[in-house]
Image 1 (cartoon, rainbow over the protein chains, first blue to last red):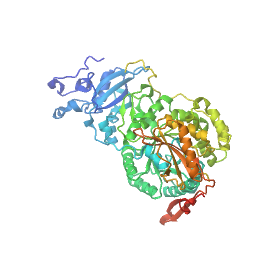
Image 2: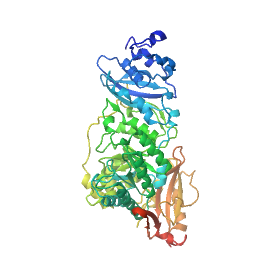
Image 3: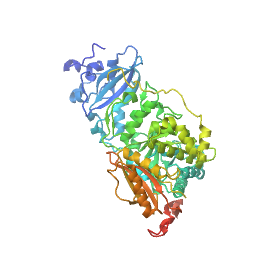
Image 4: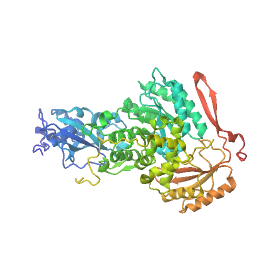
Length: 487
Length: 139
């Protein structure tokens, strides 16, 4: 530990011109007890060689709140003790040489109510490029109830979404239309119709389907809604297709959303890359217009995937629940995209629970009260198929959209058959679980039994029986289920 | 057509024992089982007729099966569903819903299109059965 890590309390010395350690400026307070109203951020810091971890933590606190590189006398015109973020705890990361967890508390007056943009401008602003650090990662945040209450939260929420869809007691089913680029509007709608008629609840535009030369957005919306309504009549169910309204300007997104509404769509979609403020605006629009809002997390892996630098997806999930989206992709565990079971459980809990207790084994570092904000529906998408239904239901539970893109459209006997295979597998598995069967161990038998009266399911199981994606995760929790470090 | 609403409409019709097992799952979760029927199965018909109140204090799924069969005696030519209500804070809505009785013939739905300007179409879905007055459908 630094021996000169003590705050300089003599005002004359503290504010004399020049450069001073951040810890000495008051950004390191090891005796500080965070207030219930404080926002707390947990950073993983990797200081440059020779940089003390306490000074590094203090620097992060300073640079993400009031400090600059040198002492400024104008601090003395403010209640600066209150506005300084306070690093109050630094722990070594288990099994990771040179990495430390730094806990930093921020007074809630530092942030504008109801603005993710403002929160992130401080917390992941300049500080991520700070030279004394090799790497910096925002691992988790504790958001006080007073602050949570300044946000709208999910426009619809899981419960009301289910009421609107008249779909209870089972995961919802979806599929992303493939190929993701190149289909004409008319051909695209064919995929939507077959998939929904076959038994899916939703189909989905992909993240990069906006308005391209092969298919302009109005054409897609019109053909898709023909498909949705035909499928609804064929099954007697409410159906939806996530119409992606992502565009270059807010004006254009509003125009597309209004058109989707005028056609009777129950759901629209946006991409994470439109930015936090645009997401909040669309969430407000969705609440005002009874629309389910699906968010595709396009781009997130550029900053969520590496353990040493960036922002953990659990933090993105918390911000998106505040921002007010209804659906967000959160991993499948068993599919083709990143996600180990323990970390993914942490994400799902953030989406769906009213209260998250600290769970280090799932990467959750703080108790988090969601103050009755609506719940977000997690979406599991990417390389999953009917043969994994028992694993999906076990890992992900009931309140989730399972999206089988290739696993529907790639069925050897067509899209409708693929959809039916997924729906039958799902219903059979939920039925068996409710009946008290051990689906984890008996899952394959349950599927085979269900396939006896459902040829499409038999064909799906035969086609994909050996497909698994078994790679080591790059982002796993740092703590085993029974952590040895005292927390 | 086969009405696909509910949790298990893609499986073969449930037996009374299947209904009991599923209802017991609801009861064991602390949810109140309820029986409802209708002759208007439109996907947005939220309010089917209640066959009595949800059975808040019932711990035995056999009673739910009994009520299903009582309902069948009067409304056997209609749709009957079993619901489970969860009163827990933060949910306070339906947890389960599955169809346990169907009409012998399910005529299904038609799409009504009203063509508007700019290729826009206003869609309505209508059950063929509701062309007859209530009580005279599926008879």
